[in-house]
Length: 478
Ligand code: NDP
Image 1 (cartoon, rainbow, N blue to C red):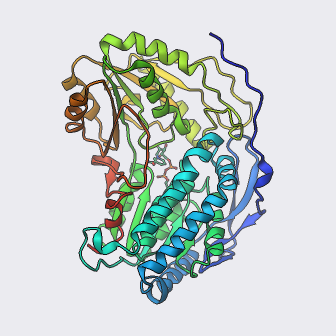
Image 2 (image 1 turned 90 degrees about the horizontal axis):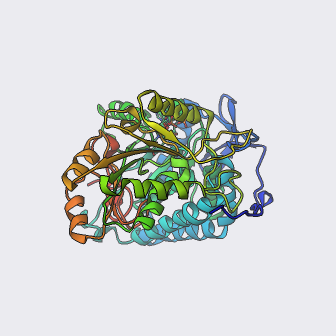
Image 3 (image 1 turned 135 degrees about the horizontal axis):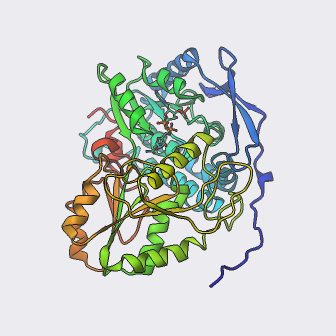
């Protein structure tokens, strides 16, 4: 059956008003950097320059940490939880009011489809602030003692795959617990963090409670190694996470790390196949596979392999790749040229190591960074595409015969962030979940997030939990 033709349905870009250049957000104000350095942020879909952004150096990071310390000591930590809650509620409401604008901005800067930024990222951002607003005056009931104390100033470094959502995961619990923050967004996606700074101004958040320093890896390094930081929270690659762990080890800083993943999405022969195929697609092609918990390894029971693969190929042929601002788009742009090069390299290695590569017929735009949805079959556990995080729209398919074999293969990875199990049998789900070494196990669904639910990893996927009551622990002196 041929796919329906859709008329273009672009979201309006005009609802976003971008400044030509952005300063750093320190002590409640936008300010230029000390040494005047700047970089450009581009749209990965068109390579168009969107804005110029200040690159914070060590002196700027120091100013931000000083502002955060002052706000911590004189304002935020001494404020009653009920008052902090009001600010968090206010931020959540403004995020909701600006949802359309924020979604367009996120899709412009990141390349993700507007359908996802509009229906997933931004609603979850608001939900996180609402959820942690609820905790701000109830911390003594969270199970961490009768009068849990905040830690102080948090230095937070986030990646480019869910820019505003990762900001919310970091800032909402930190503020609810009475900490102040200095946050560094990723170099390729700073714009929604800067829009968030404007939201803080609009919410009348006291100056210095939230500070945003833009820049590249060096800025992140200056932040996490700053002696005035009490807590470091990082989401990103395992490699940088290890470096940060080494830097924090000789200090008193508390550290949480949310790193890479190579999740198994396990489909048993009794699973509802059509539903499972939707889950496989959502697991690896959502956000172009730029998802730490992506279901990048499909483990399918041998008896249904042919059926599942045929259905999956049919489904992939219907995915629409292109303009992230088009409401019909399923697969957007790869976030950067560097990430595209990495996806290409690992996919070429997959072929060279003997796996069979398949993509549906798919026309890629000439400008920008694009990679088609891709399947690899004939993958063995030793292949690099079965072991390394590709962080792109590339699925490696392996097979198994028994539940025990599925568990062994799923756990055969240095990571342990998430897993999925598809079966009709509740008992099998529980049997599998108790054996899978993964922080989150989804049953008959995948990539579902909720602010009330903790998220985090085992092994090289990091430590500490974000979200839910557990997420408070990372920001309390317990
Ligand atoms: P990084 O880990 O380099 O980036 C994450 C954040 O850390 C960014 O803000 C980055 O700044 C910053 N950073 C980089 N170096 C340092 C440092 N030494 N000290 C402190 N902060 C630092 O990820 P990449 O963007 O380079 O992506 C590389 C790979 O990492 C991807 O291909 C993917 O496999 C994985 N990844 C995993 C993510 C996850 O959620 N688990 C998220 C992103 C990437 P800057 O943006 O300027 O580099």
